[in-house]
Image (cartoon, rainbow, N blue to C red):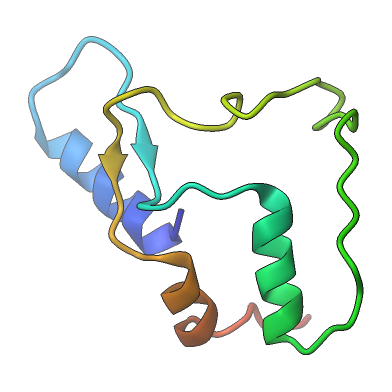
Length: 94
């Protein structure tokens, strides 16, 4: 999810009445991590191949296709990944 969309969602939640629960936010698209990495590598003209390891752990935890996605009614950001990739400058190198 784009940082600007996160900030917008946080500001909106702060200005609304308390929900007494969790407010889930999400980008407008669902991806597998390997798809995102492949798009970035292709954009950067990086020839490395993505190899998926279906039993790899995510920060030491086993995950499935639903582990890192929100529930059924998240507040969606508007920034699509392909737009973000081609319009947001990369972080400055230190």
